[in-house]
Amino acid sequence: MYKICINITYFFVFCASAICAENDSIKKDFFKLGGAVRFNAVMENYETSNNDLDTYVRMDTWFLSTEAHQKGFDLSFQYRFFPEFKTHFLHHAYIGYQIDSDWYVKLGVFQKPFGIGDFASHSWWFQVPYYMGWEDTYNTGIGFFYKRDKLTIDAAYFRQAAPKGSVSSNAEDNSVGNGRYSYAIVPTYGYSNGKKLDAYIRELDQFNGRVRYQISPEVELGFSGEMGSIYNETLNRRNWGFSWAIHTLINCDRWNFKGEVISYNYNAQSDNDERLDIVQMGAYGSAYDVAAKGTIYVAGLAYTIPINRRFISSIQPYLDYSIVHKSENRFHDTQQFVPGMLITSGPIYTYVDYALGKNHPWLTSDFGEGLGEGSSDARWNSRLNINIGYYF
Image (tube, rainbow, N blue to C red; front, side):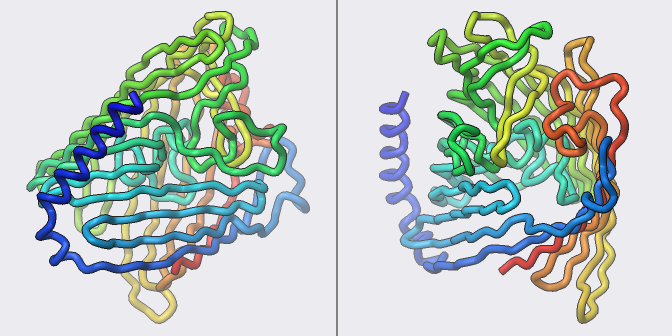
Protein backbone atom coordinates (compact mmCIF):
# COMPACT_ATOMS: atom_id res chain seq x y z
CA MET A 1 0.00 0.00 0.00
CA TYR A 2 2.82 2.42 0.85
CA LYS A 3 4.61 1.73 -2.47
CA ILE A 4 1.41 2.36 -4.40
CA CYS A 5 0.81 5.67 -2.62
CA ILE A 6 4.41 6.82 -3.15
CA ASN A 7 4.28 5.97 -6.86
CA ILE A 8 0.96 7.80 -7.24
CA THR A 9 2.41 10.83 -5.49
CA TYR A 10 5.51 10.90 -7.72
CA PHE A 11 3.34 10.59 -10.80
CA PHE A 12 1.11 13.43 -9.61
CA VAL A 13 4.04 15.76 -8.89
CA PHE A 14 5.56 15.06 -12.32
CA CYS A 15 2.26 15.72 -14.12
CA ALA A 16 1.36 18.75 -12.03
CA SER A 17 4.73 20.37 -12.69
CA ALA A 18 4.19 20.07 -16.42
CA ILE A 19 0.54 21.17 -16.41
CA CYS A 20 0.77 24.10 -14.01
CA ALA A 21 3.96 25.85 -15.01
CA GLU A 22 1.92 28.78 -16.28
CA ASN A 23 0.07 29.08 -12.94
CA ASP A 24 3.30 30.05 -11.15
CA SER A 25 3.33 33.38 -12.93
CA ILE A 26 -0.25 34.07 -11.82
CA LYS A 27 0.08 33.35 -8.09
CA LYS A 28 3.04 35.12 -6.52
CA ASP A 29 5.26 33.48 -3.93
CA PHE A 30 4.61 34.44 -0.32
CA PHE A 31 5.29 33.39 3.27
CA LYS A 32 3.02 34.33 6.18
CA LEU A 33 3.17 33.67 9.91
CA GLY A 34 0.06 33.80 12.05
CA GLY A 35 -1.59 32.40 15.11
CA ALA A 36 -3.94 33.14 17.96
CA VAL A 37 -4.22 33.44 21.73
CA ARG A 38 -7.57 32.48 23.30
CA PHE A 39 -9.01 32.59 26.83
CA ASN A 40 -12.15 31.08 28.36
CA ALA A 41 -14.33 32.65 31.07
CA VAL A 42 -16.51 29.83 32.44
CA MET A 43 -19.44 29.28 34.78
CA GLU A 44 -20.34 25.59 35.16
CA ASN A 45 -23.56 24.03 36.40
CA TYR A 46 -22.93 20.27 36.52
CA GLU A 47 -24.04 17.45 38.84
CA THR A 48 -21.57 18.30 41.64
CA SER A 49 -20.70 21.88 40.75
CA ASN A 50 -19.39 24.25 43.41
CA ASN A 51 -20.37 27.84 42.62
CA ASP A 52 -17.19 29.25 44.13
CA LEU A 53 -14.78 26.95 42.28
CA ASP A 54 -16.59 26.29 38.99
CA THR A 55 -16.45 29.91 37.88
CA TYR A 56 -13.01 30.67 36.48
CA VAL A 57 -10.88 32.16 33.71
CA ARG A 58 -8.28 29.99 31.96
CA MET A 59 -6.20 30.03 28.83
CA ASP A 60 -7.95 28.01 26.13
CA THR A 61 -5.13 27.68 23.62
CA TRP A 62 -2.40 29.45 21.76
CA PHE A 63 -1.14 28.39 18.38
CA LEU A 64 1.20 29.29 15.56
CA SER A 65 0.47 28.83 11.88
CA THR A 66 2.27 29.21 8.57
CA GLU A 67 0.92 29.71 5.06
CA ALA A 68 3.30 29.76 2.09
CA HIS A 69 3.41 29.49 -1.70
CA GLN A 70 6.58 28.86 -3.67
CA LYS A 71 7.09 27.69 -7.26
CA GLY A 72 3.50 26.49 -7.50
CA PHE A 73 3.42 24.57 -4.20
CA ASP A 74 1.35 25.61 -1.19
CA LEU A 75 2.21 24.94 2.46
CA SER A 76 -0.24 25.11 5.35
CA PHE A 77 0.86 24.29 8.90
CA GLN A 78 -0.54 24.86 12.40
CA TYR A 79 0.59 23.66 15.84
CA ARG A 80 -1.49 24.16 18.99
CA PHE A 81 -0.75 24.31 22.72
CA PHE A 82 -3.38 23.63 25.41
CA PRO A 83 -2.01 24.50 28.89
CA GLU A 84 -5.18 23.39 30.72
CA PHE A 85 -4.87 19.85 29.33
CA LYS A 86 -1.06 19.79 29.52
CA THR A 87 -0.81 18.73 25.90
CA HIS A 88 0.27 20.10 22.55
CA PHE A 89 -0.10 18.69 19.07
CA LEU A 90 -0.27 19.26 15.35
CA HIS A 91 -3.53 20.69 14.06
CA HIS A 92 -2.72 20.25 10.36
CA ALA A 93 0.24 20.24 7.97
CA TYR A 94 -0.01 19.67 4.24
CA ILE A 95 1.53 20.47 0.88
CA GLY A 96 -0.92 21.54 -1.84
CA TYR A 97 -0.73 22.01 -5.60
CA GLN A 98 -3.16 23.55 -8.09
CA ILE A 99 -3.05 21.06 -10.97
CA ASP A 100 -5.24 23.20 -13.22
CA SER A 101 -8.21 25.54 -12.89
CA ASP A 102 -10.43 22.67 -11.67
CA TRP A 103 -8.18 20.28 -9.72
CA TYR A 104 -6.25 20.76 -6.47
CA VAL A 105 -4.34 18.16 -4.44
CA LYS A 106 -3.22 17.94 -0.80
CA LEU A 107 -0.65 15.64 0.77
CA GLY A 108 -0.17 15.42 4.53
CA VAL A 109 -2.49 16.03 7.49
CA PHE A 110 -5.66 17.81 6.38
CA GLN A 111 -9.39 17.95 7.06
CA LYS A 112 -11.22 14.88 5.82
CA PRO A 113 -13.94 15.62 3.27
CA PHE A 114 -17.06 14.47 5.07
CA GLY A 115 -20.27 16.32 5.82
CA ILE A 116 -20.47 20.09 6.04
CA GLY A 117 -17.18 21.83 5.36
CA ASP A 118 -15.43 23.45 7.05
CA PHE A 119 -17.64 23.37 10.16
CA ALA A 120 -21.11 22.00 10.90
CA SER A 121 -21.42 24.49 13.76
CA HIS A 122 -21.58 28.21 14.45
CA SER A 123 -20.46 28.16 18.09
CA TRP A 124 -17.09 27.71 19.76
CA TRP A 125 -18.40 24.37 21.06
CA PHE A 126 -18.78 22.73 17.64
CA GLN A 127 -21.65 20.25 17.27
CA VAL A 128 -21.67 16.75 18.81
CA PRO A 129 -20.16 15.12 15.64
CA TYR A 130 -16.85 16.82 16.47
CA TYR A 131 -16.55 14.81 19.69
CA MET A 132 -16.97 11.60 17.67
CA GLY A 133 -14.60 12.29 14.77
CA TRP A 134 -17.19 13.60 12.28
CA GLU A 135 -16.66 17.37 12.26
CA ASP A 136 -13.43 19.27 11.55
CA THR A 137 -11.47 16.00 11.67
CA TYR A 138 -7.88 15.77 10.39
CA ASN A 139 -6.20 12.59 9.15
CA THR A 140 -3.00 11.68 7.30
CA GLY A 141 -3.20 10.98 3.58
CA ILE A 142 -3.67 12.40 0.09
CA GLY A 143 -6.73 14.14 -1.35
CA PHE A 144 -7.94 15.43 -4.71
CA PHE A 145 -10.41 18.31 -4.94
CA TYR A 146 -12.41 19.25 -8.03
CA LYS A 147 -14.50 22.39 -8.49
CA ARG A 148 -16.25 23.65 -11.58
CA ASP A 149 -19.27 25.94 -11.73
CA LYS A 150 -21.85 24.59 -9.27
CA LEU A 151 -20.21 21.20 -8.65
CA THR A 152 -17.56 20.32 -6.07
CA ILE A 153 -16.12 16.80 -5.71
CA ASP A 154 -13.66 15.84 -2.97
CA ALA A 155 -11.90 12.47 -2.69
CA ALA A 156 -9.24 11.39 -0.22
CA TYR A 157 -7.34 8.36 1.01
CA PHE A 158 -6.09 8.38 4.61
CA ARG A 159 -3.65 5.79 5.82
CA GLN A 160 -4.14 6.70 9.48
CA ALA A 161 -5.22 9.34 11.97
CA ALA A 162 -3.22 12.53 12.50
CA PRO A 163 0.12 12.11 14.32
CA LYS A 164 -0.13 12.00 18.09
CA GLY A 165 1.08 14.92 20.17
CA SER A 166 2.62 15.16 23.61
CA VAL A 167 0.80 14.61 26.92
CA SER A 168 2.02 15.25 30.45
CA SER A 169 2.49 11.57 31.27
CA ASN A 170 3.36 8.72 28.92
CA ALA A 171 1.19 6.48 31.08
CA GLU A 172 -1.84 8.38 29.79
CA ASP A 173 -0.91 7.87 26.16
CA ASN A 174 -0.56 4.95 23.72
CA SER A 175 0.81 4.12 20.29
CA VAL A 176 -1.93 6.07 18.50
CA GLY A 177 -2.07 8.85 21.06
CA ASN A 178 -4.68 10.72 23.10
CA GLY A 179 -2.84 14.01 22.61
CA ARG A 180 -4.48 15.27 19.42
CA TYR A 181 -6.93 17.81 18.01
CA SER A 182 -9.22 15.36 16.19
CA TYR A 183 -10.94 12.50 17.95
CA ALA A 184 -9.75 9.07 16.80
CA ILE A 185 -10.16 5.49 17.98
CA VAL A 186 -7.36 4.55 20.38
CA PRO A 187 -6.09 1.07 21.35
CA THR A 188 -7.16 0.46 24.93
CA TYR A 189 -10.42 -1.41 25.53
CA GLY A 190 -14.07 -1.48 24.53
CA TYR A 191 -17.40 -2.98 25.57
CA SER A 192 -19.58 -5.75 24.18
CA ASN A 193 -22.98 -6.30 25.78
CA GLY A 194 -21.77 -4.60 28.94
CA LYS A 195 -18.50 -6.57 29.21
CA LYS A 196 -15.24 -4.63 29.28
CA LEU A 197 -12.80 -6.19 26.82
CA ASP A 198 -9.26 -5.45 25.71
CA ALA A 199 -9.28 -3.93 22.24
CA TYR A 200 -5.94 -3.02 20.68
CA ILE A 201 -7.59 -1.30 17.71
CA ARG A 202 -7.05 1.75 15.53
CA GLU A 203 -8.29 3.42 12.36
CA LEU A 204 -6.43 2.26 9.25
CA ASP A 205 -6.97 2.83 5.51
CA GLN A 206 -9.90 5.16 5.06
CA PHE A 207 -11.50 6.32 1.80
CA ASN A 208 -13.60 9.47 1.77
CA GLY A 209 -15.75 11.01 -0.94
CA ARG A 210 -17.99 14.07 -0.91
CA VAL A 211 -20.12 15.64 -3.64
CA ARG A 212 -21.57 19.13 -3.23
CA TYR A 213 -23.86 20.93 -5.65
CA GLN A 214 -25.00 24.54 -5.58
CA ILE A 215 -28.59 24.19 -6.73
CA SER A 216 -29.02 27.96 -6.39
CA PRO A 217 -26.82 30.83 -5.17
CA GLU A 218 -28.40 30.37 -1.73
CA VAL A 219 -28.63 26.58 -1.38
CA GLU A 220 -26.00 23.82 -1.33
CA LEU A 221 -26.80 20.11 -1.13
CA GLY A 222 -24.18 17.46 -0.39
CA PHE A 223 -23.61 13.76 0.07
CA SER A 224 -20.59 12.14 1.76
CA GLY A 225 -19.41 8.57 2.11
CA GLU A 226 -16.62 6.96 4.09
CA MET A 227 -15.30 3.41 3.82
CA GLY A 228 -12.78 2.71 6.53
CA SER A 229 -11.31 -0.17 8.49
CA ILE A 230 -10.71 -0.69 12.20
CA TYR A 231 -7.56 -2.78 12.57
CA ASN A 232 -7.04 -5.08 15.54
CA GLU A 233 -3.32 -5.61 16.10
CA THR A 234 -3.82 -8.59 18.44
CA LEU A 235 -5.90 -10.46 15.87
CA ASN A 236 -3.92 -9.01 12.94
CA ARG A 237 -7.24 -8.43 11.22
CA ARG A 238 -9.43 -5.54 10.19
CA ASN A 239 -13.16 -4.96 9.87
CA TRP A 240 -14.58 -2.53 7.31
CA GLY A 241 -17.40 -0.14 8.03
CA PHE A 242 -19.35 2.33 5.89
CA SER A 243 -20.64 5.71 7.05
CA TRP A 244 -22.53 8.38 5.15
CA ALA A 245 -23.92 11.89 5.51
CA ILE A 246 -26.29 14.20 3.69
CA HIS A 247 -26.24 17.92 4.33
CA THR A 248 -27.56 21.28 3.23
CA LEU A 249 -26.28 24.84 3.58
CA ILE A 250 -28.72 27.70 3.06
CA ASN A 251 -27.74 31.37 2.94
CA CYS A 252 -30.58 33.87 2.63
CA ASP A 253 -29.56 37.51 3.07
CA ARG A 254 -28.10 37.57 6.60
CA TRP A 255 -29.48 34.16 7.59
CA ASN A 256 -27.44 30.96 7.56
CA PHE A 257 -28.77 27.45 8.13
CA LYS A 258 -26.74 24.24 8.43
CA GLY A 259 -28.46 20.85 8.46
CA GLU A 260 -26.94 17.38 8.41
CA VAL A 261 -27.72 13.70 9.02
CA ILE A 262 -24.84 11.28 9.66
CA SER A 263 -25.10 7.49 9.83
CA TYR A 264 -21.87 6.05 11.19
CA ASN A 265 -20.51 2.59 11.93
CA TYR A 266 -17.21 1.92 13.72
CA ASN A 267 -17.18 -1.80 12.95
CA ALA A 268 -14.64 -2.99 15.53
CA GLN A 269 -13.72 -6.27 17.21
CA SER A 270 -12.21 -6.89 20.65
CA ASP A 271 -8.98 -8.84 21.14
CA ASN A 272 -11.05 -12.00 21.75
CA ASP A 273 -12.97 -11.41 18.49
CA GLU A 274 -16.25 -10.10 19.91
CA ARG A 275 -18.08 -7.27 18.18
CA LEU A 276 -17.76 -4.03 20.16
CA ASP A 277 -20.76 -1.79 20.74
CA ILE A 278 -18.57 0.80 22.52
CA VAL A 279 -15.09 1.94 21.47
CA GLN A 280 -12.62 4.36 23.03
CA MET A 281 -11.84 7.65 21.25
CA GLY A 282 -9.18 10.11 22.37
CA ALA A 283 -8.17 13.76 22.03
CA TYR A 284 -6.81 16.56 24.25
CA GLY A 285 -4.89 14.01 26.34
CA SER A 286 -7.85 11.84 27.39
CA ALA A 287 -10.02 9.06 25.97
CA TYR A 288 -13.68 8.20 26.56
CA ASP A 289 -16.41 5.76 25.50
CA VAL A 290 -18.29 6.27 22.22
CA ALA A 291 -21.15 4.16 20.88
CA ALA A 292 -19.79 2.21 17.91
CA LYS A 293 -22.86 2.71 15.72
CA GLY A 294 -25.62 5.30 15.44
CA THR A 295 -27.22 8.22 13.66
CA ILE A 296 -26.48 11.91 14.30
CA TYR A 297 -28.84 14.79 13.51
CA VAL A 298 -27.48 18.33 13.27
CA ALA A 299 -29.17 21.72 12.81
CA GLY A 300 -27.88 25.24 13.24
CA LEU A 301 -29.32 28.68 12.51
CA ALA A 302 -27.50 32.02 12.59
CA TYR A 303 -28.21 35.65 11.72
CA THR A 304 -25.46 38.22 11.09
CA ILE A 305 -26.00 41.81 12.25
CA PRO A 306 -23.51 44.31 10.77
CA ILE A 307 -22.46 46.95 13.31
CA ASN A 308 -19.40 48.57 11.71
CA ARG A 309 -18.48 50.63 14.75
CA ARG A 310 -15.06 51.26 16.23
CA PHE A 311 -15.05 48.31 18.63
CA ILE A 312 -17.59 45.96 17.04
CA SER A 313 -17.69 44.91 13.39
CA SER A 314 -20.62 42.48 13.59
CA ILE A 315 -22.71 40.32 15.92
CA GLN A 316 -23.99 36.89 14.91
CA PRO A 317 -26.58 35.26 17.19
CA TYR A 318 -27.07 31.51 16.63
CA LEU A 319 -28.80 28.35 17.80
CA ASP A 320 -26.97 25.02 17.35
CA TYR A 321 -28.54 21.66 18.17
CA SER A 322 -27.38 18.07 17.64
CA ILE A 323 -28.45 14.65 18.89
CA VAL A 324 -26.88 11.19 18.70
CA HIS A 325 -29.31 8.30 18.43
CA LYS A 326 -27.30 5.18 19.29
CA SER A 327 -28.15 1.90 17.57
CA GLU A 328 -28.13 -0.26 20.71
CA ASN A 329 -31.60 -0.22 22.28
CA ARG A 330 -30.29 -0.06 25.84
CA PHE A 331 -28.19 3.04 25.07
CA HIS A 332 -29.45 6.56 25.68
CA ASP A 333 -29.24 9.57 23.36
CA THR A 334 -26.63 12.30 23.67
CA GLN A 335 -27.89 15.83 23.08
CA GLN A 336 -26.32 19.27 22.84
CA PHE A 337 -28.00 22.67 22.49
CA VAL A 338 -25.99 25.89 22.24
CA PRO A 339 -27.63 29.31 22.02
CA GLY A 340 -25.03 32.02 21.70
CA MET A 341 -23.47 34.76 19.61
CA LEU A 342 -20.21 35.65 17.91
CA ILE A 343 -18.96 39.21 18.36
CA THR A 344 -16.34 40.30 15.82
CA SER A 345 -14.03 43.18 16.69
CA GLY A 346 -11.26 43.43 14.11
CA PRO A 347 -8.78 40.65 15.00
CA ILE A 348 -10.73 39.72 18.15
CA TYR A 349 -13.43 37.06 18.00
CA THR A 350 -15.61 36.56 21.07
CA TYR A 351 -17.97 33.58 21.39
CA VAL A 352 -20.61 33.89 24.11
CA ASP A 353 -22.17 30.41 24.48
CA TYR A 354 -24.67 28.96 26.91
CA ALA A 355 -23.98 25.28 26.23
CA LEU A 356 -26.46 22.67 27.45
CA GLY A 357 -25.79 18.96 27.26
CA LYS A 358 -27.42 15.67 28.22
CA ASN A 359 -25.25 12.53 28.30
CA HIS A 360 -22.50 14.81 27.03
CA PRO A 361 -18.86 13.87 27.86
CA TRP A 362 -17.71 17.49 28.21
CA LEU A 363 -20.75 18.84 30.05
CA THR A 364 -20.68 16.73 33.19
CA SER A 365 -18.88 16.40 36.52
CA ASP A 366 -17.83 12.89 35.36
CA PHE A 367 -15.74 13.91 32.36
CA GLY A 368 -15.98 11.46 29.48
CA GLU A 369 -19.31 9.91 30.44
CA GLY A 370 -22.31 9.96 28.13
CA LEU A 371 -21.37 9.11 24.55
CA GLY A 372 -21.18 5.40 25.32
CA GLU A 373 -24.18 3.77 26.96
CA GLY A 374 -25.34 6.95 28.65
CA SER A 375 -27.90 7.16 31.43
CA SER A 376 -31.70 7.22 31.37
CA ASP A 377 -31.81 9.72 34.24
CA ALA A 378 -29.08 12.01 32.93
CA ARG A 379 -29.83 15.66 33.59
CA TRP A 380 -29.32 18.65 31.36
CA ASN A 381 -26.07 20.29 32.45
CA SER A 382 -25.05 23.78 31.42
CA ARG A 383 -21.95 25.89 30.98
CA LEU A 384 -21.77 29.60 30.28
CA ASN A 385 -18.62 29.94 28.21
CA ILE A 386 -17.09 33.17 26.89
CA ASN A 387 -14.15 32.50 24.56
CA ILE A 388 -12.08 35.55 23.60
CA GLY A 389 -9.44 35.08 20.92
CA TYR A 390 -6.96 37.43 19.26
CA TYR A 391 -6.04 36.16 15.78
CA PHE A 392 -3.03 37.48 13.87
